[in-house]
Image (tube, rainbow, N blue to C red; front, top):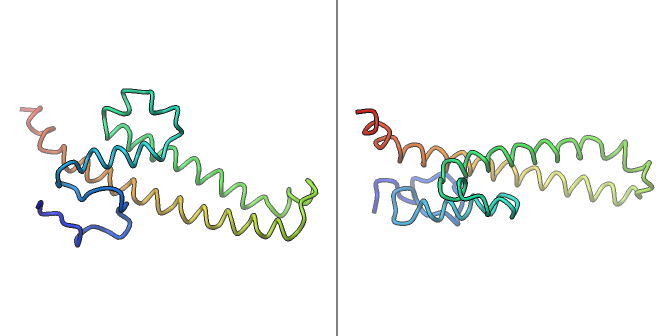
Length: 131
């Protein structure tokens, strides 16, 4: 096994992704990252062939989703009553957005960890290419 073992991986590391350095870890990381994006992105071979590009795009996608959920959460009480939404539904919607925001933040941490691991794994390759 590699020096990085599951015992040294952060609790934010996605359970669907193998530990960095283990066989096939980058493939499992790429699959997990692809699942975070809208399905139409699976057709873009540039993203799917380069895990670091996939990680970057997943990070951007999640950042935008976090912003959208924050806006939805912040405007619920003011906008939903004008749409005729009942107070009990509004409260449920607020809880839903709060849970989603928590999940998106967890996913963002996972993407950051995978990005760092991908970059750490490619560091020797970058050094060799400069020589």
